Length: 195
Length: 414
Image 1 (cartoon, each protein chain N blue to C red):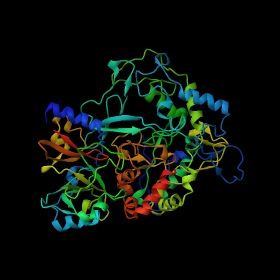
Image 2 (image 1 turned 180 degrees about the horizontal axis):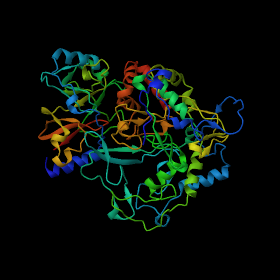
Image 3 (image 1 turned 135 degrees about the vertical axis):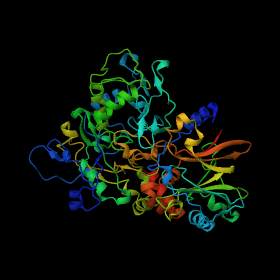
Image 4 (image 1 turned 180 degrees about the vertical axis):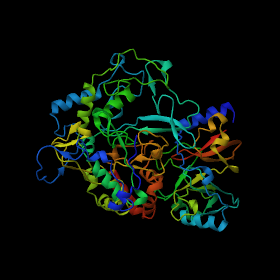
């Protein structure tokens, strides 16, 4: 990362209140076994009540985005058009967020799922079983899916002199629009940072 | 600081079962909580603590004294008073103000440090990064290499006198009564005015204080840069010694006493009684208990009887604060609900990702929720809970929309 990007990262982190969720265990302890499609479908059905389905892109990542030492699931999904009201309900059991957009406090301003959307579904893991746990239900539907998504540790994408001081969280590196960047968990929401 | 979240001591295991926490042995000593002055008499039934946003004394002091102390709490400090060299605000009321003096505000403070793979290490000069300075060259910043940072919202201090008057053993009992996977942690922190003897913490996002005098002296120094006999040295700027050119201590202790007396004399935050009486809020209140919110957001607590010596001998519970029933909706324990900010203060490394259960009384006055103010709706704040709250929040997810709306009606009445 360049010095400019480094500074941008710091500014972005401050502006978003990059929270500092530091896991109790090293990342090596995260169980990042390859997910089987059936398991992924089961998890999505459990968490999103069947309102989304795996997209044709079929990209799935297992990583520790929120740094709690438990494996999270990330999958590219599409909404079932007939379930849009449920997906966008005020009291839905998941949160719809736009990592590139402003934080919205009003019902009118918040991100909404459209029928044509391709979404990134994130299921935060719980305990040793991670995203496979029946209790793993903290979930997000993110607008805008990066291309070429790759799992990286935060330490891998920030300057070496800062890497040793970083919470061992992971991020998703990829391309969005014409820009390369990474998706990270701020402690309160998902944020896309342009590198 | 010593964590009292204690291990499974064999003795405790034998006495209370394998999951019990034990209090500090010192808690039972002569000057500790629970010792009453004078002969033991039958305690009358507890009475409700007065609750109102009315700017009136709770009876601890006269209204004239209350008004004087509130004026001190609201007083704007300047350079001649010793403001700075680094600071966050010029008066207590700048952060503790809405809807009445002692309430909340939108103001947050910034904390930072770094994680070395095992431990959190304070930012040079301490984890608090002050947002203002009396000289531009003194301004603190988050320096490179400090990748752990968070905002902390200003807390309500209304009703804190009742919280101070809760026996530490009551907090221990709450922890021991919680399911193992939800059990809170209590820590012992210094009571500065009692020679730094320790008591179970209950104030601040990390439970970093147990007494209101210690809390006031800490805030006077760290938020306004005003030294006092209990906190006699000014803060640095990112670890660099700087000066405000006023001899320390800048307060002789009188302001600290006035701040503490003011907080002790405030009434508890009141419910919105009209909303609370609606069928939806009544139903939501039941749901709150049924799904388990009340395990940590404890509804009812009773203060120690009048005459009880607390704060390691430094304060005796007066009649106005003693034997009162309060409804703070908190257990005043530290929990990891997945939102932990990675910062260690008084509780040791095991508390890095734990935060005090925020009291929900008066929370209807807040627009920005959770420790960092980053959650803007109650639904979002609820869904942000994980970790020890996972089971409860999954029960919330399973509610119908009507039930969730009823729960929101209840929360909006607090």
